[in-house]
Image (cartoon, rainbow, N blue to C red; front, side):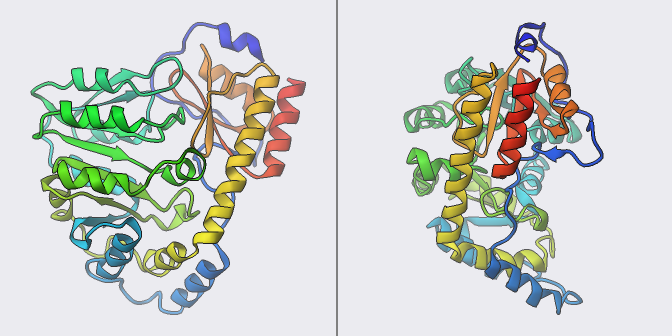
Length: 348
């Protein structure tokens, strides 16, 4: 498979490869390979008996539970239908022709939602090691910049932004421009990198333009219930709260999220298993000639000059991965998934 690493770069947006089989191993969306914890399942079963009822008009109980978990005041918190829903709510405040500045490759939701709102996504290339160049991001800000977006860990490369780099970015970006810190995968970095989840709250207290974005779709294994949250101490989050849609956070999320937040030990065990499986997968891919970048999330990034061709080769083995601009991203699955992937790359 190593010959694909030397082919000319593919162009265009991210592409998902065709599935070679009716039911491929799905390693495209960075979902948890584990279902909800037993306590969450019980909560969902209990909720199902009252599925004929609306959730809270505004998710106040959920907001309080999240604020306690994040260690921030409840008035800092806004809740929405997944992190993607909160991104969309922010972009409603922009004017057509405004710009979003962020790294590239990135989570495809940012350029897609920017385009949907008539905005331009200005991508600043990641460094060859997959890290985000915060100085280049700051230099890319113009009078038309609506927001600067940074992901830590970064999607799709898995790199973490060092605290000093983040401090430098926040100091360099004008206060009129919101900075979105997307921490969708922070639980994985916290487990094995020493990432401090409380530091973002400290930063938010002194930067009113900072929006910290998080989700329950990854480490908590609740992608299907669509629940995410953002917090901040200033005008940037206040504007999102002003656009909260009544009943947008469903009763399944109301039932599941508080219980998931209490299942600390089980979540940590699952994260630890995923991190161990990620390292086993990375070592096997490197041994097969596919140099996966170091990652602090639940996926690996394989740089290549022809991402679509490499993703298609995986699809030939019934393995669905995602082509992302300058490489291929593979989510970490179960131990069985890893066995199948490694067996395939050794034969290919």
